[in-house]
Length: 84
Image 1 (tube, rainbow, N blue to C red):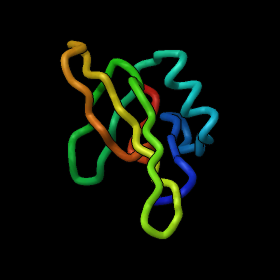
Image 2 (image 1 turned 180 degrees about the vertical axis):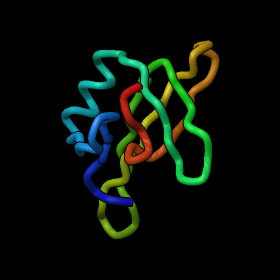
Image 3 (image 1 turned 120 degrees about the horizontal axis):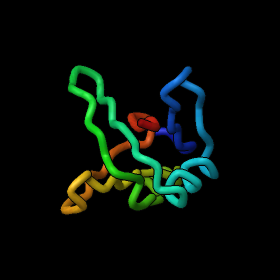
């Protein structure tokens, strides 16, 4: 994983910075997860962002996504997340 979070927009794959990931958390817009070789999944919003330190001192960023029914949260790498 990279130390800088990457959240890509739907339109052109523009990289979104850490501050923009935080903005996605605050604005509550719907997001989509696109993991290679899997179907895209829609989520209600970014529910949380987790920062963890790895064994070599880097930062690992995880996005927590709230499902449409508001019953569960999925944790994924931000690089797979885009706006719906």
